[in-house]
Structure formats: structure tokens, C-alpha cells
Image (cartoon, rainbow, N blue to C red; front, side):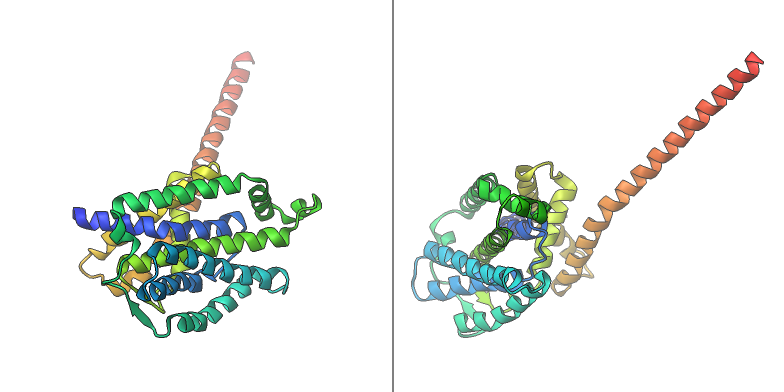
Length: 308
């Protein structure tokens, strides 16, 4: 059984990573854009926060600067795709590769420790601070997605040709969506670095998979009837994912190094389960209809025999 401290730790991590998952939701679900910049921009946020805090800057200011750093990274990815006419997946890969060197330039070394430095978590209780941050981001994000620009962004993901026919600039909406996504990812990286007490050049590896896992698990368990419901489901999915990982790591024959395999298995299950459940329901419905038609045919035949 999971101890209370382990459960609380998993929930805390889930809230921290939920901001990154919301960023992935914007590109993956709203824009239908496979953005791999996430693995680099997450480290960018953590690196910026660690460098600034180690030089004595205010921890809240570092979060804002980290968010802006993610915006810039996402903007470049969007420009590569829209103006450079480079495939979306390749644009993200190119930016992710470039960010490795950029992050090394920002950090100056592979690892920066900020254990004894003042962070946002030393100024307030994490169990008050984290829910407030997540709620504020959720409110701002849902407000933005219901503005004219946000609606154009959502329409671009649904049918870019249609929204283009109404005179909207889909290149602009794509750039805004990808930049906002990576801004949230970088903000999550900044908070994770402050919570863990260090930033590492490899801390962003696999973040896109974790974000996708949170989005898929949230939608599979809690549903996504509308945008507001979907964004809340993503946050809850991030928490559920962290709890599942914590439970899996308590299995004796699994080590901490197996977390990537665990993540892959969780994503596979989350992807396959909804499809399999729909297939089973369709088979049951088809079987029920067949039985109903067979019963009706039999009743018709017996009624004809009696009439004869």
C-alpha cells in the first residue's frame, strides 16, 4: 500500500507537471500539432530559473522570465513551420536539438543546484501555492480560449481551411498556440527546478510523453465534453499519472530507472483502452440488434403459421 507521504508527494508532482500537460494539450489536442519542442523548452524554463535564483534574483521573477523563454522557443518552432514551410514534427525536432546547446549556454554547466536558495516554495506553503497557481492558469487559459483569438485558435486545429476561408490568419494562430504551449511548459520546468532544488540539462527528456500520458489519461477517465471540462481533466490526469507511477515503483522488481518503460506502458494502455472498450460496446450492440431482429423474424413467422 502507498503511504500518505508518497500519495501527497505524487499529488504535488502531478500539480507541478499539470502546467506542462496543459501546454501539451494546446498543441496536441487543440492545434493537432505534434510539437517535440517540449523536451527542450522544459529544460529552458528550469535552467533560466536556476541561473537567476543562483544569482540572487526574485523567485517569482524567474518564473515570468522562464515563461517568456518558453514563448520565444515556441515562437521559433511556429515560424519554422508556418513561414519556413517545414513539417510540424520536424520543426519541433529541430528546435529541440537546438535548445540543447542553447540550454547549455544558459546554464553554463550541466547541473545547477539551488537547494539552499530562496524559491517560491520557501515563501508559501506548497499545498496552498500549487492549487492557486494551477487554478489561476486554468482560469486564464479557459478565458483566452473563449476569446475571439482563442476561438480562432481552436478552429484552426479543427479545420484550418475553413477558418482561412473566413479571413483568419492561421499562421498567426498556430504561432500563438505553439508559443503559449511552450511558455506553460517552461513555467512548469521552472517550478520543478525550484521544487527539486536543481536544474539539469537532461531534465526535459521524455516530457512530451509524460504530457501526452496526462492528456490521454485525463480524457479517458474524466472525459472531455468541452474545453473547460477537458482542461480540468488534463490536470486530474496529470495527478492520476503520478499516482500510478508511484504505485508502480513500489513493486519490488521495478527500479527508478524503469520509469520510462512504466510511462510507455501507461500511455499504451490509455490509448488502447478507449478503443477496445468502444469495440466491445459496438459488438455487444450489434449482437443485441441481431437477437432483436431474429426474435422479430421468429414472431413474424409464427404469426404467419397461425394465420395459415
